[in-house]
Length: 204
Image 1: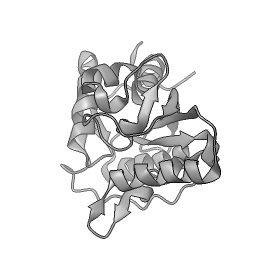
Image 2: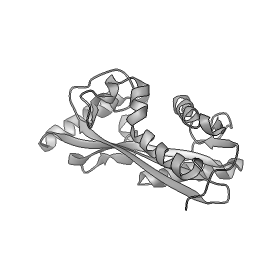
Image 3: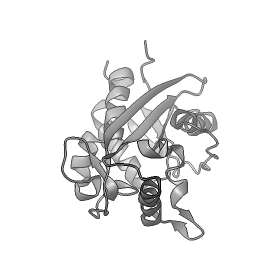
């Protein structure tokens, strides 16, 4: 039995305003006030985990301990089967440059490595999102979500972010980069994880 969320304020351990807006909208029906890590002046903890759940736990527990509020964190990325599920937890790291993140470079690297390996198409892949809701007493609940699909080339679309222009979700003929964000948000890996979170901790 999962622990129900019974507070009125939820801290979301992210400095990303877009992600904060998305989560606020998803929880609007439950009368929960959502506040972000930036508004609380929280530092971003170092993500030293080797799995999505480890990194989400680091962020959620650090925020809960620092503020005394229940805290929600997520870690997400893309797993490409022919690359032994890389980049996985290192999805953002592949885009790091001295001048910020360059996801065109990261997507090009993914494509070039697939070609170098001689991997046959379709290049199956999935986006993964793991949500962790942590309480100040150390308890947490974990909710994983996935969206299956494949890597396509060349890049298509200028919507979304990250690797969206090379990911075509299963059952669709366009990439995440060609979908408007509301369409993507209805079917994404994060939507899957959120449905599990709501069913487990909010929908009582």
